[in-house]
Length: 424
Ligand SMILES: [Zn+2]
Image (tube, rainbow, N blue to C red; front, side):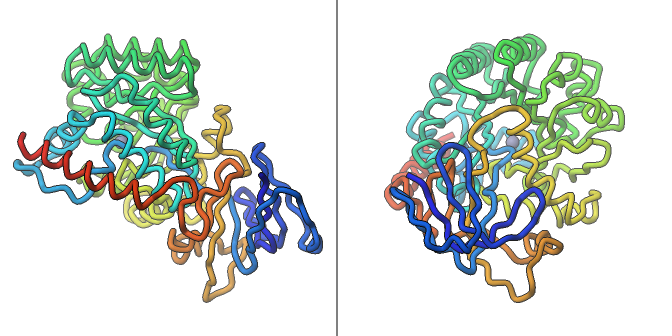
């Protein structure tokens, strides 16, 4: 079935040109822009959405997410209060991920996909960890995302932190998932991945023509451990291992880098994912784009699923620490599409759109759109969302799954998870 968006104000996400259009949206990755003079078009088997007075533009994508952390929202504080970044991982995230079982993984993915869709994101690059439920975990997440109608690029977070058997399971899960699906080879971070696991991950990357998705220098701790154990800096170590070879590789955070590491990154085809709200929350430092080149995209790091919020956060947090302008903030926000297109990943074509119910108090034009995105438009203005030509959010409601039932179940499962953790 096709969709017809009638009388829309269409904003081309690349040129920012505004035009009044009737838009035919198809499921074959294409849209057709027609003059609004064609008011009498009648198409068979087509749902019509009245977009008069509304803005229509390309939907958004998340450049780094952790669906597995979805049920942590509001959970009781850990018994030991973390004093630094390694303790945050140990007392919070590595406590949760060890408890995840197939039901919790599925619910986490469903609620994440729902929130992504409602907030206008139709593509998610996710990084998953469930060390005591590794096998089959990626397939569960893929199915949950597809049920909601959100496209995905998944990976399992391989790590030696729970022992070599579990590291091996992570490698095997990656191997079997990549045999049937596009995806990435996930690694936690340099400081929890020894040389053997790193080498095997890079082998998988080459075997499947994939990329590595890894946290890099999120805290100074990562650099200190690397210097102590390997006698080199993190990016140097990854570069020596061949991680920077692939344009599909995503280096997440990249806070504590020296100039030579920035140069290694900017001279390579890899991508950097900025997640500044997570950095602020963990008190690990501030992102600086200087010297990293143009391949910078934005993520949420599992904090939420609202990319308009990530855009604003990158802009505001960047004011004292980064060189970020209205235009470069918008480029980073939209770069996820370039990453996906240049690497040939499917699911992010032009038939992914958001309809915004935004009635601005000031004129909105090609010249000032970025100002409206930073200071006016929020996810509350998102009315409809179209993913791969399908209407997955209609009038602010998910059309593909029963959101109410899923949330009811996820609250139950979250309570179970919190109880399990409270015994530890
Ligand atoms: Zn992360």
